[in-house]
Length: 356
Image (cartoon, rainbow, N blue to C red):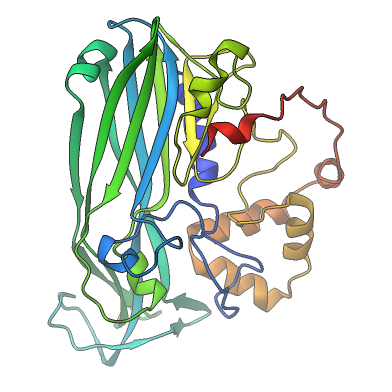
């Protein structure tokens, strides 16, 4: 399994929508976290066809009962970051749940501003090997649970007094990952990975930010085989077209990953990709934007005022790193973003049948 390449791609895709143009908290984007969200089932029950609580990947593997399959599911678990003000600064004291505080959108301390925001923690389930014969006879069910949790940290002024705090809260999320294999032909197996959010959610509000705290965000599945090979769902061999067309993928898009021609790794992403996706070598780094276009967004960041750039840099570590990287680009690097000619890949045009 080409784990290094999978990790690079997933790291780029996980944070699509983390920051949205134009990258500062004073501008409210309509919807962040727009890809790969699995919501609590009680929330999706009244919204058929819109938001989902499950995701399913199906693909074909050519192999034997002893072929080993590795599956990894990754998603983001959101964190609410709130900024609080102490009406009476403290010289030094424990900062805990009993500390009286007034929560605000932002707090200025000297020349810096601390903002309330929504962060994310990466979660992963799986990476255990299963042989196809055993998986066909006994499907696996992996239960998972993360959170809840809360922590507070002090915000100090230039004299060292505690004038505020940053509180991070994380809700509980739980669910299952079901793995199965089914023999569908001579040395052919259909692999199914089904992910389900089973988090209890009773809030009457339709506030999307509230729901997202109990959701699996930007959910991705990576699959690898040893002593076997995956069959492309986008451009399968002619004799296997009926079998690939019968694969049912819900909310996700499995593609081959690696060097052209390698068939031991698949990435199942909620963002539409082609086989053997690559991160463009001209791209200076992640922009975290759900409609990422490097040149346009890079130029837009460069035209921000000094005050807007400061707000962007104060947002969080990712926003600050993006700003610093953009401002450090040499002229030649900017010119490389303007456009590149790439060779088009032959395509059968039948890939849509594999994603019913």
